[in-house]
Image 1 (spheres, rainbow, N blue to C red):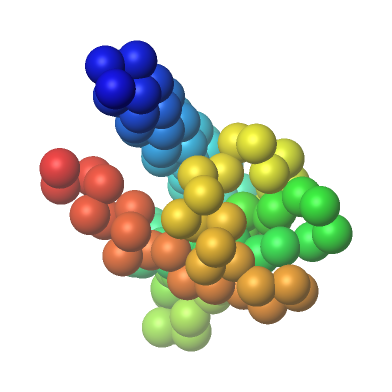
Image 2: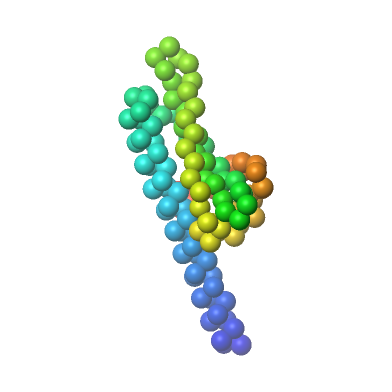
Length: 114
């Protein structure tokens, strides 16, 4: 009984650190992407949306960055990267659909405020 409790506790801690690492990686990647987009288009980024998509046995992280040109025309820049399934927490993997973008922006926002 005690060993079972210890194993469950270890699994929860390991799962928690996987989730924290996942969000930290996404946040770091987003910061680099926003800086690169600002350099390329030389415009302020007004908003960002984050998606995940299942592609075969891996996943694709997608960030869409929105800015405005001087003539008030909106510009959407999309940055993607592929990640292995082991890098994605189980609850995010469960949300991801085959070949369909799943918006995880609100999950990222919740992680940032906690």
